[in-house]
Length: 115
Image 1: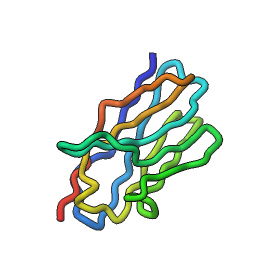
Image 2: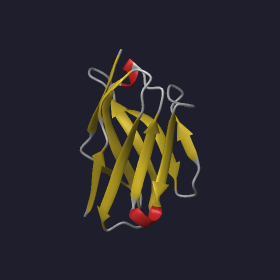
Image 3: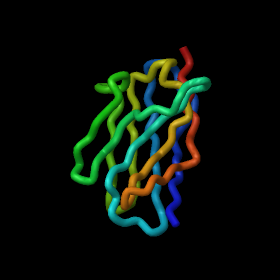
Image 4: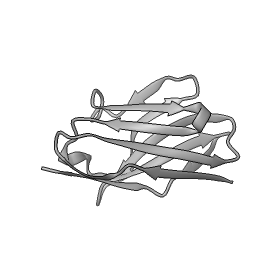
């Protein structure tokens, strides 16, 4: 059993910053990739950023240059540093792990950016 717990969401003004954390617990092994997704009201869930087992990363075009994904393998924790936030970044952010080619999701954390 794997559990993912996100934290760090909240309300911030446009131009501000937030850092999201995702702590993984349970039987953690053979992680293929870790990532952050988001879902705004009335929209589909979309990939924000992903970090692969080898350390390579990829970002959605809308956040490239503003968001940074990272991980601490010793703590089984992943982070998303979000800078220069915009109102259109408002969404529920979900942590995701692809482990042994199975998908695991966190419960989500709300990020609201006011204009």
